[in-house]
Length: 165
Image (cartoon, rainbow, N blue to C red):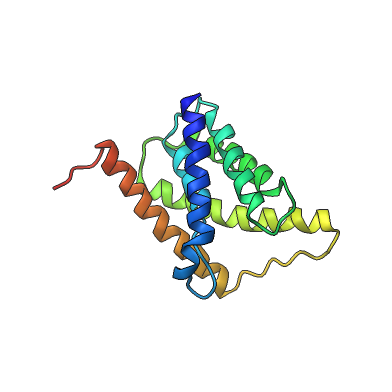
């Protein structure tokens, strides 16, 4: 219960930082998706058998829905589906390798962007959905990847799993 309450407060603070502070550090109009990066980190370091990642993804998706232009529930559903897919992938992988994390984060960013836009287009009945993979999306991917790698090493450093020297 304490873990869930922690993530409710933590994700609220992250969404406030993302929407209220990070827009000052945007690159060509893109800001990193801190909630998506955090969900991928939690799922990556959680044991694949545990189910709390789904609830954590739902909490983050709820906050993303509140602060996005999408219909309510699209980010929540997308993050829960993404959690399911990442947990399936992690069962095949072993260890907490940075290359595994980078590949999962790239997959997560691309999946979140395309699947949420697709669901929003279906609900608004506006077809075809805009799936342009232009320079802006690549820049967003690189920005999220840089923040994600930084967060990965920060978590590893705080947990004492990497040497400091």
